[in-house]
Amino acid sequence: MEPSLQLIGRTITKTVEPKVGDSILQHAIQHGVDWQHLCTRGTCARCRCLIEAGSEYLEDPTEAEYRRLDPEEFEEGYRLGCQSIVKQVGEIKARNKTYF
Image 1: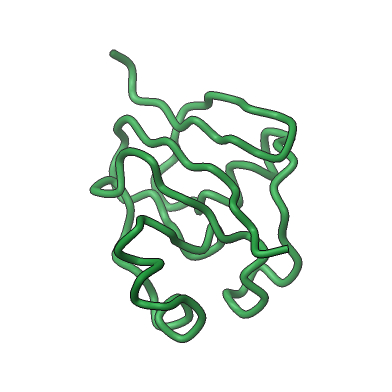
Image 2: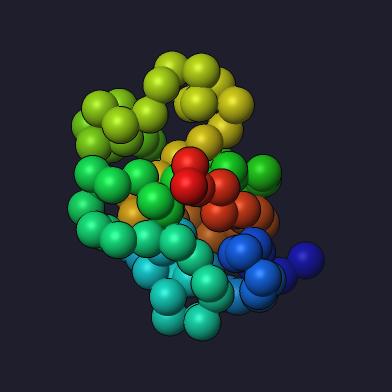
């Protein structure tokens, strides 16, 4: 299988080639996926997403995520899309799951 990143927005789902160094949110914006976001810095949490597969291909959570997300959310697989940086290509699946 080819490495892929499946982005599941509110009404648009796309499977794209993951680019190392880019965030989940950057991928969604670049490929026209309707991914909720506002600040792109990890403070608003509108880009919160559920990593359904491939978390091992993402950088570790950032301080911004630890400040914004609850421990239970991390356990369930939630991350902030703007802070979830692809560190290695592989099979990744992310679903935008905003609070609002």
